[in-house]
Image (cartoon, rainbow, N blue to C red; front, side, top):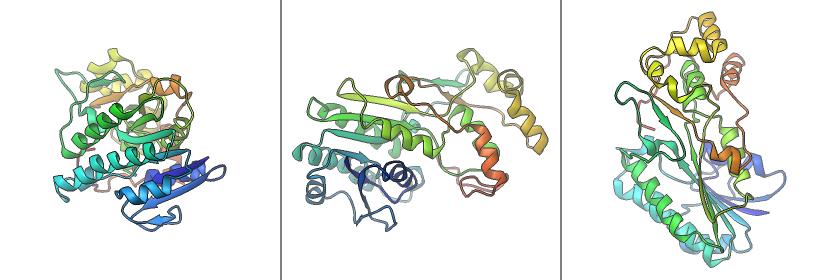
Length: 296
């Protein structure tokens, strides 16, 4: 296939490019130069998009402003990139008869945390609760894509959980609750290029969780007990490394539709986080380092 990939210099875009490039012609667009990017420019240009999509089979739209941009760039710029830019991508796809559009969204739109002493249990049916301009513009983009999806343009929305480098102890816990390996994110995008079904589909893409809905009270108030029950190997690993356990664990993303509709399964659990730390991978930060606390 010939696939147009926006945001190809970004973290997720690079992972998607790597997952596709051995078998497909991938045309990357990004305003930041990188080896995965063929066209270096702002993607939000209808003439550019229409030209580059001619003859393409699919487009993967990853380019966006994210949580770290909140408070740094204006709300108007968030709207220009995340909403108006997505509309231009969809319009160009329709104009050039591209058959499939895969859109990168985020689980941050759910905005759920501990309520009434219970950790949030977030499924594909959970109603989003946006809190920032980032969340709102992602939801606006999803809504406009839902309206244009039809027999001529199938649209798949990948609501990915957090996959950026963080301290290893946090990442290990997140991998069981609300995080995912970027390679698994890329594989979900690839699977979404060809699956059958309704014109518009959306999926939570997050790591496998050992927890159950009935665990939400313990996750919020006494996570050590439920970790010992559900995933004792993680508890052992933390004890061996002298790492404290977090209190509380505030949410779990438990989407299942990606596994059924896309035939997708995450491959990299918390064990991979520890292995990456031990081999000095840049994908994992050392425990205890200070990181930005901006919202997802």
